[in-house]
Every structure is written in structure tokens, then in C-alpha cells.
Amino acid sequence: MDPDLEKIFEARELLKQARKAADELRRKSPEELDRYVRAISEAALAAARELAESAVRESGFGVVEDKVLKNTFAARDVAESVLKQRTAGVLTRDPERGIVEYGVPMGVVAAIIPCTNPTSTAVFKALIAVKAGCAVVMSPHPRTVECTRRAAQICQSAVEKAGGPAGAISCLSGGVMAATRELMGHALTDVILATGGMGLVRAAYSSGKPAYGVGPGNVPVYVDRSADVENAVRQVFRGTTFDSGVVCSCEQSIVADAPVAERVRQECVKRGGYFLDPEETAKVSAFLFPSGEFNSAAVGMSARWIAEQAGVGVPETTEVLLAELDGVGPGHPLSAEKLCPVLAIYTADGWRAGCERCIELIKFGGMGHTISIHARNAEVIEAFAREKPVCRVLVNTCAALGAVGLTTNLEPSLTLGPGAWGGSATGDNVTARHLINVKRLAYDREGLPEREKREPTDEEIALAVKRALDELGY
Image 1 (tube, rainbow, N blue to C red):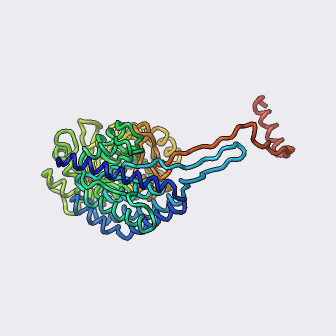
Image 2: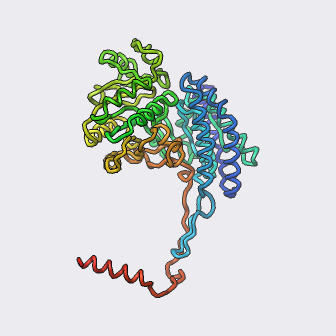
Image 3: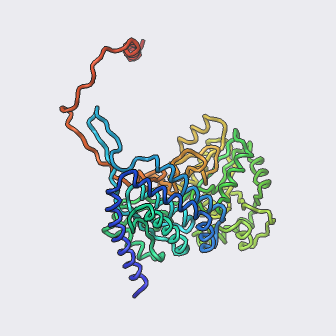
């Protein structure tokens, strides 16, 4: 059989199994769904290192220890978060308004899994789907088929051992675009979770199905004159080197306020940053963006490897390459998203100039995603946040880890919606609640019980008088 036809047939068969599983999951109690979630969590935690090692081995990039952390975050933090959510049965009762809300699973989820996070994203999507009472069929990236399939198998085995249905969590045996399109557009698919390149995300939105897509994150970091510069640079380097820069919320550029710009540079050098001169910047730009598009061979590779490939000599201690730029856009390729530890760096005099530069960077490939600010001036932080077309503004933390909820109190998630700015239906950190429909039972107003009648308190009378006097200008 033709390979494409074979994978299309496989997609259809997995969807049939998923539909049967979804019908069973829909009838499960919240307690039963939670039991499956706990089983997935325990199994995935036990396999966190195995999955990390297999992902690095198969993809050829990334950092094992960082992938262990991502797998652990997905298995533990995400599970703990969704277990607190009410997604099935009665969600809320409001007798006064005569409204009861019920959670109803969307059904069968088509989940696109990227090569940058091939196991953690698989575990994450399995957890939120099952918590919502949905079944999920995954489409792996061609570069990381086996490790994604292994993650799905671990999760499915855990569900079955906990008494759940077969076919609840499955994965295609190959990353074939024809099969992925079949998966997304098939009549048995109810909703799509698309994590990957913009072409694939656009395909998800064009499938005719409800879809949550995640686009690129060209994340700028503004370092204000009021910042703790040492901590700011430490956090930036932690983010841009995390798993060799493949997380969509990794820091991509530094915009340093003029009074602290030199201190920022000094801290960068202390932490293993190598500043490229103009000739070296041109060489690295040509290697990373040979025809205007990012060179996929550089995804998740180290700064030293990139420098060597570009013909630039750097010290063995080099962790990050930095290019001082004076513009943004196609004429400055390193101002774009770079899935590796390479940072653009700018100087701006004052937070307003820094704000304008950051907006330029966001518009050049990161609309709606994330921005980071390091400052101790609360007024600057508030003003800075209001201006940006992004759904996450992170303060004094590592953007790569803060955006997903590891170092902040944002919802733990590995699918970060960019909102309408980024062409998505949501700006949320996607979780189990996004995979349910909310059904509302609403009673006629006339049949509702009358509210209890009582005399107002002295405090309520005084407040009413004050409001009346304020309106009259007294």
C-alpha cells in the first residue's frame, strides 16, 4: 500500500477506537476520571528520564536534564492542577438565578505533537484530554515518532490498568502530513490541539474543526534601570539555554535600558555570553537564516556548535551567542525567533523607548505570545504591561519557565494560546477546561423563589447616602 494511504487508513482506525473510548469516558464519574489522571501522572513520572533520553537520542538535540524537568512538570504539576478542576457533571448551581452548569466532554481530540517537546507535550495532552472525559489521537513529528509513541503508550497503559477504556490515548506510527490532515479534518474528530510550526497551525484552523493553535514566540526581555541586573541576566540565560532554546517561551532578545546597558553586557560575559562582532554576526545570521527561513539543522543545538558551523571561533566556556543589533525585521535576521541559545541585544533610553522596541520584536513573529520585564519600579511594570500585544507579561522571572507556570502561578500548561493577536481562539494557558462544553440549565424567572426581604443595615444606608451625595457633587 502507498505509505500515505497506509497512514491515512491508520488515522481512521485510531479515530474509530478513540470515538468508542470517548463514548465510554463521557459516562464516567468525575472520581473515575481523576483516578485515570492519577494513574497517568504516576506512570509518566516514573518514565520521565526514559522519555527524556529517548527524545534527545531520536531528535539529536536538546538537553536530557531539561527534558526530564519538562516531563516531570507535565506529569506532576499539570496533573495536580487539573485534579483541582471540575470538568464533569455539575460544575455550578446558582439557585438565585435558576441556572445549573454541566461539563460535557468535547469528544475526540486530535493532538499535534512537536519535535521540540515530543514527550512532555504528549503527556500533557493525554492528561488534559482524559480529565475532560475526552479521548485523544496524537500525530507525532516525523523527527520524533518513537519517543512520542512511547509516551502515548505509557499513558494509555496506565489508563487501562486503572480500569479505563482501550483507545483513550493513541498515536500514529509515523509523522506523515497526509495522515495529520486526515486526523484533523475527519468527521470523528471534535477538536484540535495544534502545537507546532505556523503552517501546521494554519492547517488546523483551516480544517473546519474547533482548534487551539500555538504560534511562534519571539519573546523580548526588557531590563529596566530599576532592575536587579544580576538576577535579570541570570534569568535570561536560564531561559535561553533551557533545553538549548527550543521552548516557544524562551527568551529571544534583550532590550537594555541605557543606564544599565553596560552592566547587562558585563553580566552576560560573566555567565558565558560571547558578543559577536559585526562580521561574526553576519556569519551566524547567514548560517541560521540561509534563505530567510530558520535553518532547522540548528534547532536545539549549542552555542558552540552554531558558532563552529558558522565559522566563528568562540571560547569553550561559551553558553550563549549575543548579537548587538540596531533594527528589527528581515534585514536583521537575528531579531526573529531562534530555537537555539542565540540572543539579539538592544539598548533603549528609557522604558518608553524600550516599549517601542519590544513591540517591534513582538510584531516580527511573536504576536500575542509572551514578553518579560525585569524591574523594581511598579509604575513602570504596570505601564509597560498595558502597551504590549501579548497574553503573558512576566515580571522578574525566567520567561521560558514562567510562561508555562513552572516559576509563576499561571495555569500549568504546555500549550500557550496567543489570543486574537496571534490568530488563536484563546489567550489562555490551555488546560482541561478548554476541552469541555458547558451546558446550562436555566429556569423561567417567574418560577424562582423570591429573595429574602429584610431591612437595610446602618452601613448600607450610610453607603447609599454617600453615593447619592457624590453623584450630586457634594
